[in-house]
Image 1 (cartoon, rainbow, N blue to C red):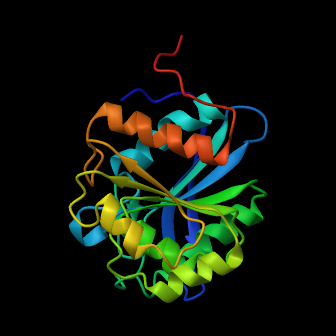
Image 2 (cartoon, rainbow, N blue to C red):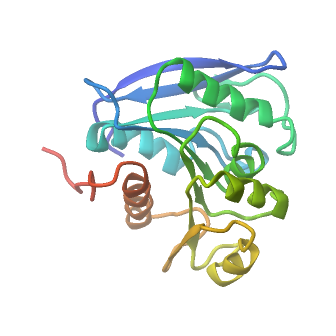
Length: 230
């Protein structure tokens, strides 16, 4: 639960349909970040928000340990201690504008080497709306493939951008063997099965696995992350 040093800034994102979304940008204390994570949280109607634990711990640790910037925000109609974003839940459809607003913000701030990092519902937003945005690739945590279609996957494949999926062995919605079959249209996908893990990545051991895999993807050569800090 340690919060490591970083420059943390409360931010607001403006969507093309006139909404204000609340969020936070965590940057390394000095110098330019090596890479940027634009995070998309789990399903807000089932407790997902910008403080969902993997995303919160990424923001608490990675600016200091990996020189990586982390942008978190609440999608429309979602609340957290940071505040409540305007609008209402759009079943992943109207949230397209939220994803664009987050990427546009990162571009406007000159944040380098931008990657979308979606968790559960956030993977649906990534697959449905992220392929043509100004990002280098995507990381999917516990993708359920409830909303994203084969056409969405083909759109990502056509871009040639890398996509990496971390699929828990005991996921509630999509286990590794089924994921390999369902993700066939996304040619070039790097699918990483994670032994023993479940959909919510509960436990420090699994948090470390996820964060190390993220860093290995967006900032090769930086990890593995230390387990203790001076």
